Image 1: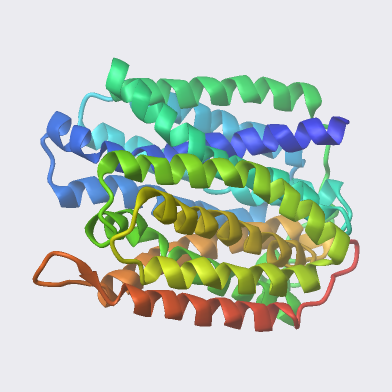
Image 2 (image 1 turned 30 degrees about the horizontal axis):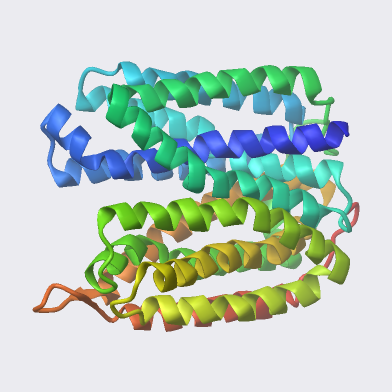
Length: 395
């Protein structure tokens, strides 16, 4: 029961920092008007968080396995909650840019730390179900957090969503203090040398390098679709802004329930079988979505919801196998490096998609189907590499 409460608390942690990351994008017009900034300056607000998260993730390689997991989470999440709340107090663009960078330094490692805690507390056979609950926090952020944040911004101003995220974060900090046990990583003690340097140990292990490669291709294959989902649905499928909100409400809402269910099924049939099952099923909505024509609301939501549900579901089995690839003494550093590389993968996926997709003379997007087929190829590469992973000692 206590472990369940820990999982739900970690899901709430994921909910807040993903909501913080996402809420900025739909509020773009408000920020550009409020601070009188250009579109390029606004994209700097979005990208500075990922860049900071990449840097902190790399630093975390050397620090994650040196301290108690609970104390590390408290330090990072308290810093994140304070900086998120402070974003609602800024008076100009420069202040918000600086706070986004600082919040990325705290929040960028939180996801990796959550995976490390799950790996420490749950055996390999139970881990998929636990990861399903954790990933539900991501889904809830898209389905519930972002729409709720937009309502708050519409009713009370753009500052209030940041107050909400920061306040909820500080409340969850109390749950961490009260419910989390001491979780000490199993590391070698003594002065750090070349032999026990975590980065050297990770790179020297072919299995961990393979797992990091899987994570990179998996995220690249998934997120290469994401940047143009809403614009494509508007220009090519004929959706308006209100219908776009339904995509996130329905699709994200379904994943809140589907990811824990898929996680339990993965535990039952094994990650090896589950990865092929859900990966192949996910290709159906990928092909439909990237080739969609003008359709009605029902069919459009059916396709996008299928992408949300199966797209998130196909992540659980490989994530289970990736987390089991690191031995206990480098697990935190491994997760931090994995998180850092995934931030680069997300940035690269947006760049690649932007290079491929073009706007035709009639204003619709072309070549999005090529992005869909490329996504499938990248995901199949990830599956092939996943099948070569081995379970490390201590999992």
